[in-house]
Length: 71
Image 1 (cartoon, one colour):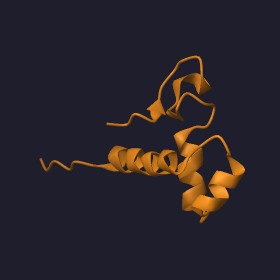
Image 2: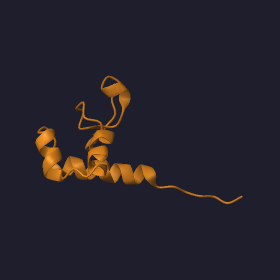
Image 3: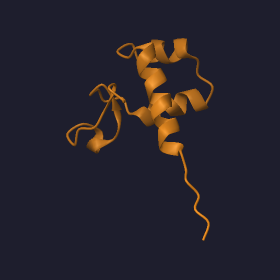
């Protein structure tokens, strides 16, 4: 489902990262939240691709899905 999001205990302490690089998903999502454009992010992190940004956002959205159960 998230083939560009990797987890490796030897990289960033096992945090969700972009394709095994030391670029955490949270960094990319944070950049978008602060208003950075895709072009700005790609310029700042030349090793990532537009699909990495899209998948980082999809992963964040997936994590944010919340189920509320009433008692």
